[in-house]
Length: 402
Image (cartoon, one colour):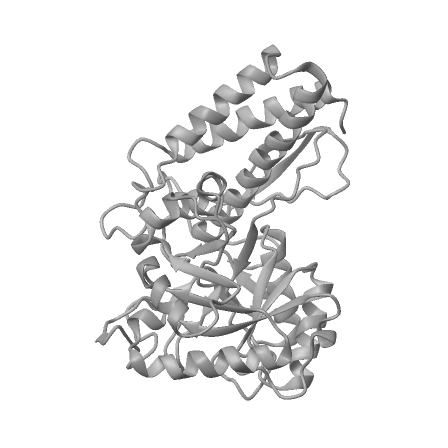
């Protein structure tokens, strides 16, 4: 499959083949129904057109308050060959991440000039909020180097499963960030480690907990925390729920899935699930064989997307829909009152959606199931979104808001 131009694939006569087509709607597209066709040609010359229709609603989706952070390992530094990408690919990947609804990323640069350049490229890709830097921050870097972006220093990575020897590094990194006047971030595998984290120094400004081990904690609707999970799992509906309706119901401050691409060590291939990813990689005292951590696959002109990657994007769009309905409901209440027929219907849908999304029973890391819940399909999620869209249009008419 080529990334540009007509796609070519081998198809066996009489056998079904699933083809995935992405249609991008420009930001200024006029409301209404837009139609087109996909042309399919056989090697012998026979041709068929497949109708494609897209309905654009007269609705501007609101931006959620929750931060959608994604770990990004790509670098423009040739001294880091494992994760180095050409600058045009770097820009293409950042644009892809932003277009899927993420608002924050990590930057993997270690030299001051490249930190500044990467920050500029992130702004040009549309990022305007947080960028996370791995500690220690390169000497000479100040907040002014980020041109309005908010730099946050990542001081430790799941130290609760890495051992006491990591604690001194955590303290040093906290002190280094404090000396620069920069906020901090840390991740932990189990929320039960939070009291111990407080004993190691000032609690980082952002703490991300590993959701499969911390569902009860997140279900407590504890504000201010993020949660993370493995983005490479081939479970599109799991990613969709966690990036969307689950985030809405949980009240968490944000998400931090890992990661866009963590390429395997050369000469291992990102396209081979059976070679090594990181030889000798150990966490929690255990060395296991890990699948390559890739939400997308590398390509010369950008990336090859995956169903799990599109699932995350769909989830963030779900979040934007439910955020829009929440905001319009407040405006409609002010005009028509909470007992207005449409407002009552909207609350019923929101209650039904909240009841369908269990915070504790969500199945994230199962080795046998690809779905987040046994009772909820991808079709159900899409039907909830369609109902939210209908409600948003009705509430917008009541509130007189465009």
